[in-house]
Every structure is written in C-alpha cells, then in structure tokens.
Length: 155
Image (cartoon, rainbow, N blue to C red; front, side, top):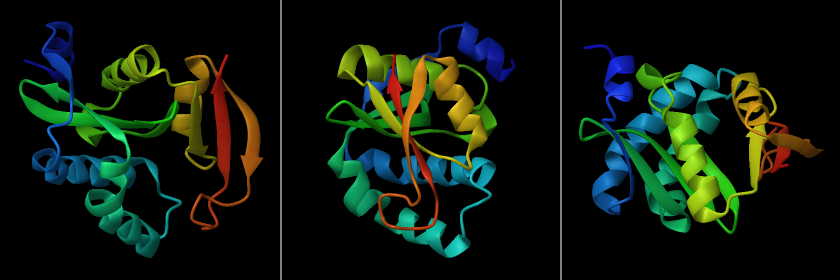
C-alpha cells in the first residue's frame, strides 16, 4: 500500500505529545525534514539547533504529533498563537500531513502567525497557499544567525 493510500484511508492521527517519550522520534523527524529542505543551513548551525530540541525547544511549546499507522511522521509546536515549528519526515512530505498539522494548529490552538526562513521557498509557498502573508522581514533568525526570516500572518 502506498503512503498516499495510507493517508486517504484515514490512518493519520493528530495527537498531543506524550512528552519526553516522543522526543527522540521527533528529533529524527526534524533532522530528516531539515536535511531535505534547509540546504542553506550551515552544518554547525543545524547541529547546534538539533542539540537544543529535546532540552529547550520541545518543552517550550504545545507539541502536537502526527502519526501514520501508529508511528510519528510529523509534528508541530505552538506558543501564544505562533506556529514555532512544523516538520514532516522527508518520506512523507507532500502527502497532506503538514496541512493537517497546520489546520489543527490554527483551529485548535489559535495560530495566526509563523516565521519562516526566507531561503526555504517550499515552506514560504506552503504557508502563503494556505492564507498567510508576509508582514515583515528580519535579516537574521531569532538567535542572530545569518538566516533571514519572513514573518507571516494569517489573513
């Protein structure tokens, strides 16, 4: 059975994170997604960000997990109406899981804003196709690294 038919069969489940027991699989998903979409990110920056996922970033957000056939394949994190993270395992990109997570974040967590790396054109297009528009731009990311951010808001 293909991944697409798995999705259409309704096997994707959106659920709250179970906490630290979920963290290792979510880090693996993050790495898969970043390797597939963030070719602009220096290896040292990627490794540094990854080292903070479990200890700092996951616990700072309301974390939601997308499961396919009982296995995590994506996740999102929300804080104060901002979508702080949304990552899909590279093998499952383009199957609707990201849209399901985004819809959950908007409808259940009140998300109206997201910051996106300007160089991640696929993510910019993903959000703009779903009603977000650019309201401003920053030259650096939130940690001061040289990766411009686009600040998007839901219209």
